[in-house]
Image (cartoon, rainbow, N blue to C red; front, side, top):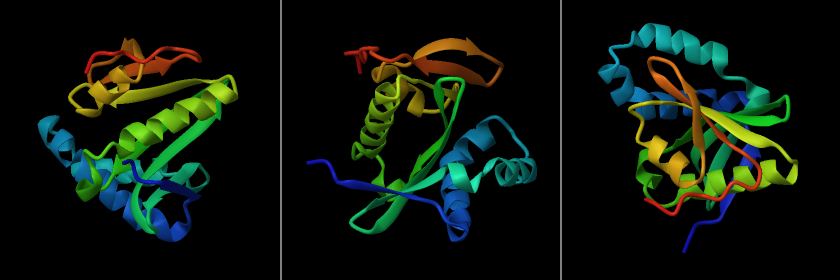
Length: 153
């Protein structure tokens, strides 16, 4: 049975929690791509926008966070992180399905960028996201309203 996931607006006190999950989740990617940790920390500080951040909780315990915004008819997912002990339990899938449903209700597509070596790429493909572009490190992906998810794993 899937957990009931609560979503609340982030507060300034949630910054450290979000930063900790970001770097825990991105540690391996930062190492594999040989990125400068200090530059990544500065980038995180610039890009974390309180009004866009939401905290994910199960049974009153904060277990993750996401950041998104709507621009030009598209809900853009900037970040999604689930704390390690709560990963591989379907939480990310459940959050993404709800995000897609909310976007479809508003007649928005969902866009995101994912680092090519990020294991979350498989989740996005399973949920029906398609690659619409790329750069040297990331795929640019989109889920259009009404897109059927892939049946492949």
